[in-house]
Length: 176
Length: 446
Image 1 (spheres, rainbow over the protein chains, first blue to last red):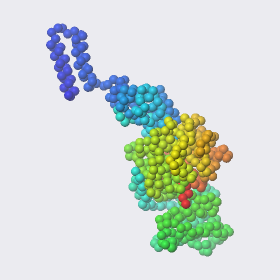
Image 2: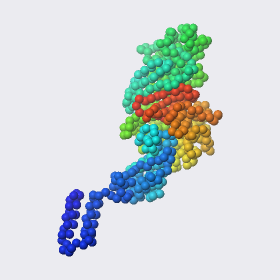
Image 3: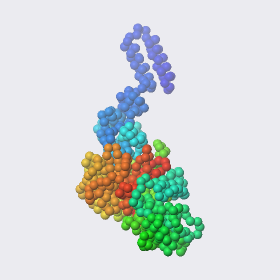
Image 4: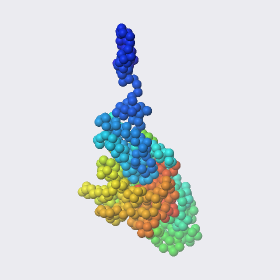
């Protein structure tokens, strides 16, 4: 049923109930009626709670951490910095609540250091994110780490700003 | 994905052999359209030996090839940095046999050595014979008199063989001009990005795509007979190691387990392959027996252990590990045992390439944001920096130990350079578009 029609019907019934009431409206009655009506509308139309990380709609909600899927690292380091732990926790919560969810953690590095060493470093970063997610309820069969080392940069300039963008783990959903 | 192709044509623009040798090849390449590989000398050697390679007389039917044999030989010798070949235009005459050489004239022109020769068809008409002599202009001594026989399409290879022999006669070290190089190219961006594993002659000519993929390719490594290349491909969505016959294209999947499958390296006898596998949870060096398929784990440490290479006698494996905090080169007996740290200077050292003498190890040496090629001498325990940086990596020794090929950056793209083992001579190989990276110099192909 289309949204406008549902909304119109809800409003019509609400008005009808109100109109049929012979008693003066009480606050309680009005609230009860309104709740019924509003619930119906919210599910269809309004933004989801951005803090509800079990809700797949938050993947596209810019105000939810679920919409953020890249974790950045310091040079030659693989520990998840405090400012990115929220993102990792949000995705862990989603995976814990949605057993069909599958994620590939793609580990990347900047261009400094040798290519094969950087494959190792990218894997370390992926493992580091995987460890946090596992500790927060994601299951082993939901997580795969693939290291690309320095082979898939998002930025190709040899300076710190660009290197910082390349040192990352991308959280890639292969199933939601 | 066995995209193999053969370069169909090339043009050569050799301006001046002496100072601005520039070889420009325009390839008709199905997968690498209009790719150009340019070689130029960045810095030369003042003490180079003056030599004249006189154009070889062409005694076969049909027109003489261009460039001719002598020009290819001259270019090879010039690129080594040890020779200063005379321009053909400056030659007083063009003798093609020993008897016709007027030594006095060449002495006046301050040439120390002169090579003369001719090319004729083999008796069966199926190949070329390169008949040549090398003479000392001052003494008149004949230093070399040889006939090199090659197949019909192998005249360039024959010329490289002549250059190898002249190089060995005058330096005492076998030449490496008739060898090949493998490298990775990357062209395009985003979803159009394409990777190729390419094999070319050591002078950059005749590039052939061995394999192409939209997913990353890396770490090519030659088998000791020069027939196969092992490499890493992401075509299955994760790193996997393949071994591929360069001439037939036939290939085997060597390893594609969970985690990293990287850094393959054939043992000197060709019976084993060292590689990096992270199946245990982090990268370790493993040895695959290519005869019986057995695998043994050589390292066991929480650190990143990778980039294994073999000593020439096959007894030692050198590898990169950050077990001490930063990447350094370590050694371990190839049959197993304790790892010992090898590189003791430099903030960090990685990706070893062992010289054929087994004593010198080329590495990518990092300090801050600068990476340079250095050679670590295992006897004197000292390192010598060979290159100016800033992002130099992937050193690969020539099979005669005379030069080190490596990857560097120019602006935002990757190019290949080669530096003489003493650091005096450098040259570069540039692809006109995209990156060239991860060079691997082939063994001597007999």
